[in-house]
Amino acid sequence: MKPIQVGLLGIGTVGSGVFNVLQRNQEEIRRRAGRGIEITMVADLDVDRARAAVGDGIEVVNDARAIIANPDIDIVIELIGGYGIARALVLEAIAAGKHVVTANKALLAVHGTEIFAAASAKGVMVAFEAAVAGGIPIIKALREGLTANRIQWIAGIINGTTNFILSEMRSKGLDFDVVLKEAQRLGYAEADPTFDIEGVDAAHKVTLMSAIAFGVPVQFDKAYVEGITKLSAADIKYAEQLGYRIKLLGITKRVDKGVELRVHPSLVPSKRLIANVEGAMNAVVVQGDAVGTTLYYGKGAGSEPTASAVIADLVDIARLHTADPEHRVPHLAFQAHTLTDAMGTLPVLPMSEVVTSYYLRLSVADQAGVLAKVTGLLAEAGVSIDAVLQREADEVGGEGATQTDLIILTHDTREGTMDAVIAQMQALPTVLAPITRIRKEELN
Ligand code: HSE
Image (cartoon, rainbow, N blue to C red):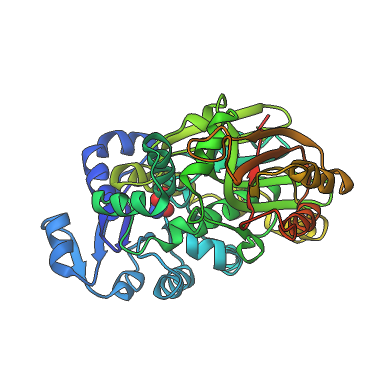
């Protein structure tokens, strides 16, 4: 059979990786796919860079639309990124009857409903293994490997930049700003790291996993997103003294009233495997009713790890593109017409309805009755205390001190309840600074 022909839009780090891995492993990939997979056209605004990356013998253009217009191209790989021109080109490629492979989590998390509907109408595939957790085949696992399960929850370290920063803060006792600068110097963090450190990148990824896990539409606009910029070295240290590590988790959970969809720093028991995922690595824990807990670990970014995922999608398409579209794996794992029903019965819950436990750090006046007042407010609201720690971190409190840190771990409670109690505690004259609140996930 003649090789399937691929056009590549954007040949930066990942695009070069795709090109190199396809070349290096072409014989094994051909044996797996049942036919060759060949990149025959590359589009990049920087034609010289593209030419240097792919050598001679491949058509290099600066106009992506030349690829979309080429009737010989079967699959378009979109590696441009962002929501702007990438959205237009993906929709144009679909309209031209091309299958699309993309690593663009932002595009799919925000415009996925439109893109998947267009692809279904046209009978083409949109594959996005590389969009979530880079080289880890988590989309394949959720969409196919775990298809027997009613998935209960997913919790993932799905942003390598922030995990690197948190690992450095913990191991070196440094504050966020210092580590961010170091991460930028080493190339772990981008010059503009906003999407990573504010949790947006992780929210894009967990939005996609949530849709696949629960059969709901992609709803990034309903995700709760909180990054790591306000975390202090002191909180990481207190958490460690209590047996926890702080990780930026993307969490999606099915509960009675709907679906939780949230990204925020979380205390995780140090003994959990995921708490020990350090540096820029990614990991995802999935809890299914039949399989129990499964854990997926690996590189969430980088040239060849991400290329590994892109090429897996190319192989899937090479195998399935002649199949009747109704017999292919649905884009979001569930048959498209069932997603609307799911939206009615499984709404994404507002953060005030989320039930979780909490770490609270209060900077308080070190005088009689302060602890009793604070715990009294928690008791009145029906919030149960799991642990209390005072004066264990260095340099805070002690005999003769006027101020001390009071750390409280709670049991599960509704976020709305916790918001109200925090407001009451904050109003006490003996609470001397804004209260720090970090959510806690036992993941058991
Ligand atoms: N910037 C992401 C990370 C990789 O740090 O994990 C691409 O999503």
